[in-house]
Image (tube, rainbow, N blue to C red):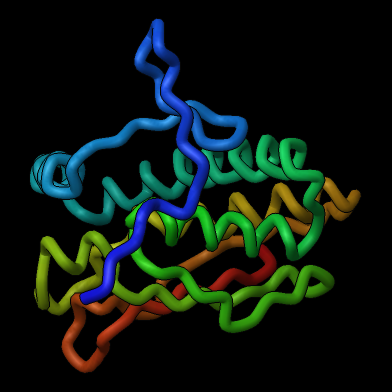
Length: 176
């Protein structure tokens, strides 16, 4: 397996220890730590209730991230969504590939390979990447709003690499 250094800019404040990438402060934590916390919360709340919470918070966070990154890099439209998928992939969540995107229709399909969640959960025959779902609608809606569109979207996970018969995940974004 070939390896390379991170492909995203990381700055660490010498006085505070805060890590920053582009315009936003970041946390750097081991995957097992993050996913174990995720699994613990899921165990208490149940996957459906936890997925609903994560959808809302993920939507809000993706909107904020896309807004800040668009400003930082002078991006707009599809370029913002592409940059978001690139940065998510570079940060170790998995490899996010845009299969299709249409801003006029408010639609997109995103394939997820090598999901951090699937690596930890394994083949459990259910969707385990649901944390990402709200991210796609939040990103799409921020881009649409920045263009002056009142169209809003919803995202759903069609399948996960943790499910039998699938090696990757697929998410779709569509109008409300």
